[in-house]
Length: 170
Image 1 (cartoon, rainbow, N blue to C red):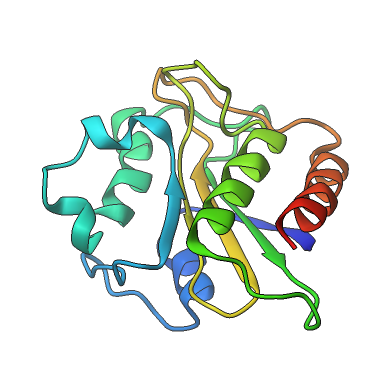
Image 2: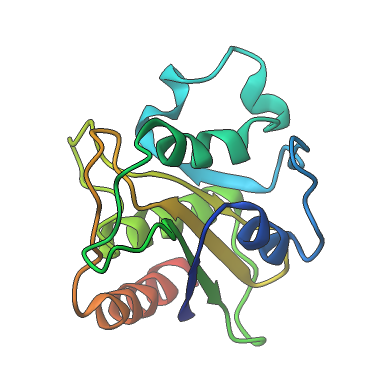
């Protein structure tokens, strides 16, 4: 797996479009089987049938920007949408759904996006819509209104985790 951190965005639409390989209309849903993992608290924010069609994914990723309109990065930047894409080598085998989910959670932890046991962390989803590719999209504004700054050596941590995931998942 080769991880790449993309430039941060103002909203989730462009990163989701890149993950899907097509544009995503505002308010449009995602195919049910493309979201392979998400932040642990999502279930408490969604209606019972909402996750089946993923119609509100963009809204859930965008909500922290609206709920905390004055939160910005240490540089004063409001581009809070973090986008990581990870690509497999063409010779690697295709992963199963649970393997994609495991890899997504491991990468979210390596990026500091998901901290086990933390209840006010970042909202994120992992999308697997293109062969051999996983996209992790997160809002860096945490549920408590603070800004999450990824570790200084995030790409190094992500590369190490991607290599470990490749060994255990392939």
